[in-house]
Amino acid sequence: MRLTQEWARKNSASDIRLTVWAFNKPAIDLYRDLGFELRAFDMGKQLPVTRDMPVA
Image (cartoon, rainbow, N blue to C red):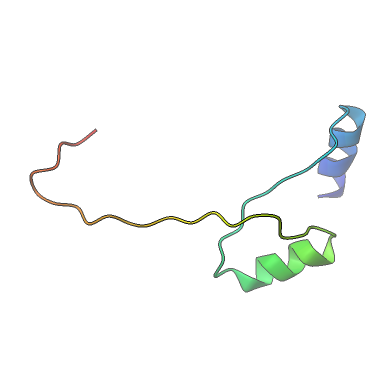
């Protein structure tokens, strides 16, 4: 993570974002310890698959 932040600063980035699953408490705790903060919620819903659905 330190190298990522150094790279970002050298490339004029003003923000670093990451995605973590809500159930992954150890990762959330780690990222908070590293100075990350909760900024938004990303919500989703799994849809049931039916036999007549076309496969993409």
